[in-house]
Image 1: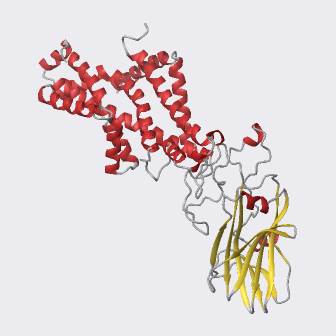
Image 2: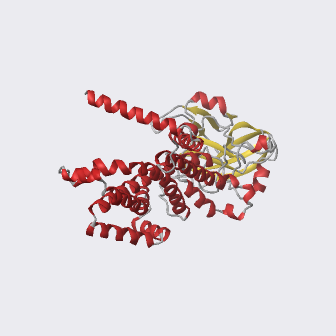
Length: 484
């Protein structure tokens, strides 16, 4: 017990001495601060953004892959409105607060209608086929009724896109039309088609993002608007309306805007901070595995020598002369670009140079008198390698580990940029790949820099941070550079 305490005290003393030396290195402190910042960013990513990095498959009436609260594609950052003076840019607007119509009270507080001869409109509480309430219209003769909700559109610019959803249950045939109106004038009208009788029909109506003329026609100026649902029945009938939603997507959204995926636009800030996790994990794990392989192979090759040394070094030479990037591409295509495959393949092709460095040190160390003394005393090969050789080369491990991380990060980013990424994860390289494959490439770069510059800067700063840490460790642990 006393011996263990002494070892702990000695280890703490050594670490304190190391930290004293490390804290004097400005570049080392800067690199460590950047890495810690990225680690914190990766850990608290879910708390920094309420959105998923990729649109989830939602249950309910939204199409699979749709994230209803993200803005439309290529929305600029929200701070354009203040810092660049673009105060007229439109933002997201979701005027219907309870689209699910959870209770009768929420229906009566938002929706309006006028009773018409031949039809009765009532907020219906939840029934056997539904968990929430709905608007129920009972027709006794042919007539047309209308329900609507009013909202304020405060922006001078028109939105980029809007979407309307409605769920309908009809007992018999009925015509249903949705419209957006300013005052008494309908600025947009769409008929709900293919309504099935006797079961709920869900319809998601998208305006489309490539129609600025339609946007300007629908929302020509700021003011009071209304979403109207017009129902026409041709006899005795019961119609229920539920899940009525209006999603208005603006030109500005989030800290870094949105990407150019027309079908599933994503918040760039969210993908950036979640990409930090992938880059850190790939960089650290790949560097750790390749460094361990290099250490193990270098120790065995250098100490045992003979045919073992010859075989291991010739294999290392064989891998060194092969072009790394083409070989990586071939291996990933052959094995599939999963997250763990990326890590293992990057690790497999990253140990050779370090193994040669360890081998050269071991060739020198094994001729020292303390190794000869260990042999004479009957120490086994594994004991000599683990207790005598490894501690003498371990300083190089820390330096190599720190300087190998940038290479692994850049390699993963390069492969992802070429399209060899795991489709289930988001990474900085994948963001660059999606930019190069999007229609944003044909648009002025100065307008959509917010999509490509942030991941590029993130890759660069994280790589530089580990390089700075490696330089600082080299100054402390390398006897030739150590200050005395």
